[in-house]
Amino acid sequence: MKKAYHLVLIMMLCGMLALTGCGKGGAGDSGEASGTAAGGSGSDSGTGLKPYKITLVYPASAPKDLQLVQDEMSKYLTEKINATIELRPIEWASWDDKTNLMKISNEPFDLLFTASWFSYAKDVAKGQFVELDELMAQYGKDIPGILGDDFIKGSKIGGKLYALPTKKEFGQGFGFLLDKKLVDKYKFDINGVKSLEDMEAMFKTIKDNEPGVTPIVSSKFTNTWSAANYDGIVANLAVPRGSKEPKAIDTLEDPKFIDFFKRMHQWYQNGWFDKDILTSDADQGMNMIKAGKAFAVAQSLKPGKDKEMSVTTGVDLVQVETAEPFTTTGDAQGAMLGISRTSKDPARAMMFLDLLYNDPKLLNMLDWGIEGKHYVKKSDQVIDYPEGVNADTQTYPNPGGWMFGNQFNSYLWANEDPNKWKEFEKFNERAERSIALGFAFDQEPVKSELASIANVEKEFDATLRSGAADPEKIIAKWKEKRKAAGFDKVKAEVDKQLAEWAKANP
Image (cartoon, rainbow, N blue to C red):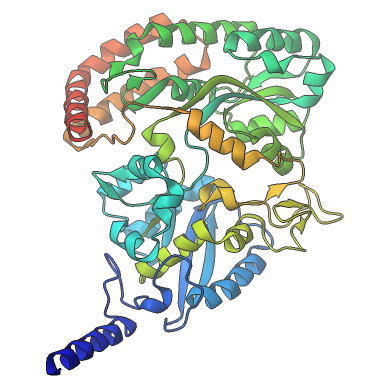
């Protein structure tokens, strides 16, 4: 009987310790957020937690009504996890400079947008992000089930998770967004378009009949094509799509790569590209289409991309897919949020992330703003602009729903396919997975060689991608200089790491 009494007493003491914040909250946990009151997924009370302000840093323009939305989110978060939120958008053009300064100066903040193409691996190597596995197990138990094994696998570096990916399209589709009014004017049959060859007749028609209209805009086109065909690693070494073994090839020696750039050279000679092909981007393409000065802009695609862009730009667009979706490690890591090592309460930051995956109300506030002011509901899941508001006059344009949480919980706009998220599921299922999904190359052993190779690339890459010169001549000179810069050593290191990864991930 005495033993039983002592056992009960010990259990009660452990429970009291947990409630007072002595539980482990993960790497860097201040202890403030520990306790059963916010013990994980679906928590609906901030009781027992000290007030805390969460800072979310992401690339976007600051909208006019940022403060209004921030205040509304803070009210909701106070009820949920006794936290407020500071939304800190940073212009894309200023992102590198401003975030690098934040990191170097050890500025306290909580959550940072990152991606494979946005310094994720480099920041992990520098220790910028907190490891998330334990934090997620404690404060985000439902997240792995929502994301699925492939998203989690593809997001890890060295077997550890340092940022959580947005649940969105798992992979990229590839093709073009087209000005619908010109598609209708010339009665183009876009349903039959499946390849670049199919696009050529349309480009020729526009060039011949629409003076002042550029057939295709955007320097990103060749990058998009490369992403559709290769799981790129470094220095033009890549695992080709369809490969049955994780082995890298040199794309500069691949006939498929060379033939594509021969085609680009011909398109350039046909006058189908915009004059700023080396510097133009997708935004410029959209602006030119809106101004009636362009027909097509190359894009990575997903179901309903044309409708999304029509909402945000106010231009009627249609999309055509010239390659089936493909998933690489870069796609799994295409949009993520990591918890900064300077966070004062990583556990609370994880609670906020948990809500972005589980709580549609919070996610849609971040995505679309305040109901009745920035949007009105047409049904439970469908929204539209309030009366008198349009894409040009809205005061809280979407900051980038693809950057946050579970996009499948985001409301749809009235002009979108009501089955959009079902189509996303189908899209994700049919996306071909790279044989090297989850592989991340450690550049440290060959960083000096890669720096030299990068200088060589600057000399030749832009000219090749513009289509302005004979690709075979450019590639021959490129390979010669690249070899002198240490390419063979880099290739040997890539082969070594891939083989080690494949052995550890059968």
